[in-house]
Length: 217
Image 1 (cartoon, rainbow, N blue to C red):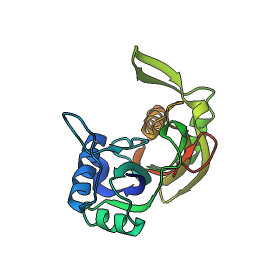
Image 2: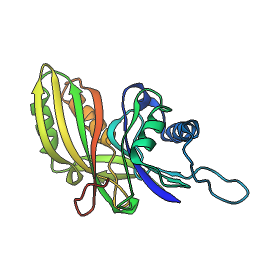
Image 3: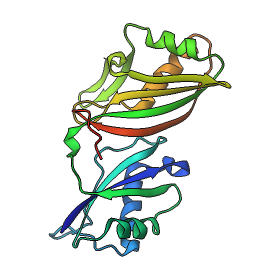
C-alpha cells in the first residue's frame, strides 16, 4: 500500500458544491480512473479519502489537498493523468506526492479576496483600525461573541476600477480556524453602517501553511 497527497484546484461553478458533495465527487472520479484504490475493511468497506482542510461553500482554491491510499505504487504522472481524465470541469489535480505533514500541523491559510464597491480602501482601513471586530460564532455550547481582529493579517491590498483586492492570512486547522467569509461578512456589515454598499466577488485560497510556517503540501 502507498499513501498519496494530491494538490488540486477547485474553481468556477464547482465552488458551489458542498464539502460532502466534493467527497462524493472525488470517490466517483477515483473509481472511474481505475486507480487501485485501497478500501477499509469490515462490514461496510469504503474508499479511504481524507481532506486535511475543508473549504467553505462558495470559496475557490488553487491549493486544496486530498489524501488517499493505493494498493500499489504508481508513477505520479500516471496518477495525475488518470485522475484528471475522470474529474469534472473546475477540478484539476496539479501535483501528487507523499503526505509530509499531518492535518494537525496546519496553522494558517492565505486568501485572495475581491470586493466590489466605490472607494472601498479607506473603509477597509477604518474597519481594520478598530480595536475589536466582534462577530457571533456558533460553538458546541451555543453562540459566542469573539474578537476576530487579532486573527487577521493583511499581506497585500490594492484598489482599481471599483474593486478592492486583499490578500489575508487567517488561522486554520485544529489550533483555530477563521473562515474568510466571516471576515468579508463582518466588513460588509461594517460598510453598510457607513452607507457604503459592498459585494464580495471572490474568495480564493492560495496557500496552506503549517504551524511552523512550512508549506503544508
